[in-house]
Image 1 (cartoon, rainbow, N blue to C red):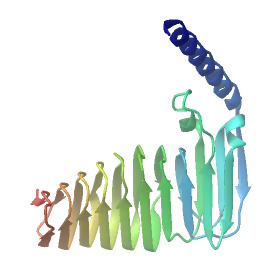
Image 2 (cartoon, rainbow, N blue to C red; image 1 turned 180 degrees about the vertical axis):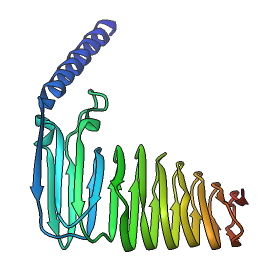
Image 3 (cartoon, rainbow, N blue to C red; image 1 turned 90 degrees about the vertical axis):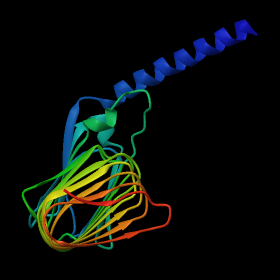
Length: 242
């Protein structure tokens, strides 16, 4: 029995070594590609990338990384939605996905959805009449700044931290995970927050804040805006003025 266990361990080590070697070889030398696409107003990115968004008149994506990894990036535009996915999978090579850099260009912007990104930031200031931002799973860092009429931000499960700056008329902030939404640098007339998980929300409303406390996460705010709060059954979070 002991001998069988030793043989099994050796076999697993050999498999792991071979897998690591394959993943390392798969990356290849650094390369890049750029593709100009049809118009789109929504962007959905799945998988780890370091993402830079530039809002201008051109619609394009530009990716940089190991040539082997670039082969496993898919992208298409359907019904005005640009979908990009990182299909590379390797549990043996630490942070291999983080070596993929993605630049996206667009004009009109209505929705951004990220699933497990490494980092996201926008180059320059975004402008949108109505923008919805959804960050799912364990994003490391997301930074968004711009001028918005209506802004709706959803931070899904995971420990992601999201920072928002700029100006807005009405803002809705939802946190269902353990991370934090920092919107202190977003000057907004009206703010509505929903704390569903354990993570906190920080905001700077000018006129009014309405907080919905559903979990244990707190909603913090600065300034002298009129405040109202609804605390649901079994919720332990609070609305706190700083």
